[in-house]
Amino acid sequence: MNVQDVQQAAELLRRGRLVAFPTETVYGLGADATNSAAVQRIFTAKGRPSTNPLIVHVAGEAIAQRYAAWWPAVASKLAKRFWPGPLTIVLPKTEAIVPEVTAGLETVGLRVPNHPLALRLLRAFDGPVAAPSANRSNRLSPTTARHVREELGDAVDLILDGGPCQVGIESTVLSLVEAAPVILRPGGVSKQQIEAELRVAVQIRAVHAAAEQPAHSPGQQRLHYAPRTPAFRFDGPAVAIDDAAVGYLLIEESRLMPRSSPRTVLMPNKPDEYARQLYGILRRLDTMGLDAIYVQMPPDQPQWAAVRDRLRRATRTLV
Ligand code: TXA
Ligand code: MG
Image 1 (cartoon, rainbow, N blue to C red):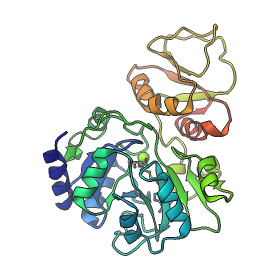
Image 2: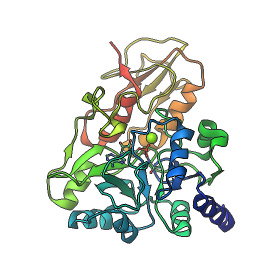
Image 3: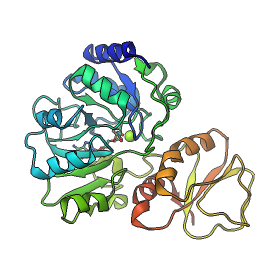
Image 4: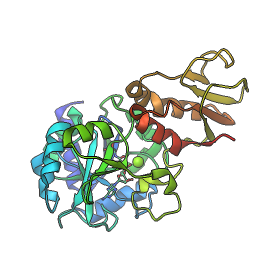
């Protein structure tokens, strides 16, 4: 990736076009967050309901401050500790961010991504870039440039290829507009890390009961990050089923299950590594024409919160 590509990408953004770019979490589909027509193109390209707000990406804390109506001390603390990084901070927005970005909400999610190419693009563009994950609505987020091409094809004007994403699942979305900080979507920065930094209790809102509620945080809808193949989750040890038309994502080896094969994947036992591989593996299983994918859930422990959240959105319970 050369300097010219970044300059060209920035120029496209200035002209109201769409640019997909890598971040440490997943690839984003970017547009100028101050340009309504450009932002509308994102919703069209993704087939995304216009009630689902977008995250605004900026090059640094000083620039983030320009787009938040106020910037509390907690935001500064978090920015200094976690930016650039997989944390999105929700605060009241300024006028510069057009209403299409936030689906009419008075708040905006801001983040500084930790990827050299994303940062170069944001500096070259020198403004706020609205960017959801660069996938069709409700599908798995892309973690490589090839995934973006598969998802969006010609709907995107340019794709910057920065290799595979290192975190692999989306950022933590943290709201600072309530009495206490609330995690609206668990992600690369954990509740424990935020609490250690702020020395206050942080809530995780009960996201999985939110299916029928209005889209307060649309990432909270069920089956939001899902493969096309019906996917089911189960807890505990793997049972003795083997079906040539079923794919398996296992967390522990089992003598009862088919050995590691293209359709039986023994996942890493470390949350970071699991997250990094998750979407790519689900995407691959999704191309195999399977009847179903069975997912063995990792343990219900804090370090697995973000991975479990995505698995719960991608699967139904196996009964
Ligand atoms: O890691 C990420 O966050 C990736 C990369 C590209 O930065 N972006 C991403 O964007 O996952 P998206 O659009 O797929 O998810 C954004 C989610 C929304 O679904 C919503 O849950 C939350 O962020 N969000 C955005 N703005 C919000 C706001 N003002 N209030 C509440 N939630 C908001
Ligand atoms: Mg998304």
